[in-house]
Amino acid sequence: MSQDNLSIFGELIASKLRDPAMDRFENLRKGNHKAPALQDLQSRLRGLDPETREIARRCVVSAVDSAIHDFLFSLQERGFKNRPIAVLVDGENIADSSDGLHGEIFGKDGWFAKFSAYGESPDVA
Image (cartoon, rainbow, N blue to C red):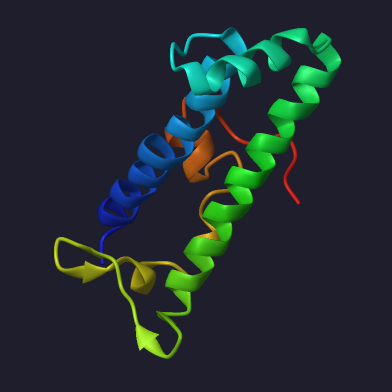
């Protein structure tokens, strides 16, 4: 499989999964949502002091990144509940071109640094 296909998948993960989750948090923090069900949450976020809002943001990033990591690890393991699962790009299984999909998201050359509007997570663990 070509590195191009792996990068295409990485860009998809960063721009269509991670970034929308972070955009959602930022829009909640800014109070941009009009939905009545979100007004209390937005109000409470606005009421937090800046340090606490930053802690909340870091928690969201950590949770989202951890979920993506675990999902990619499952793809690398090629299955779930004894059922084969594969993601194909141009007909090729993306797990075949990586020695660990879950590691592709990290580092200065990782998918988050290269493709996410929010860059690499400062709290990698």
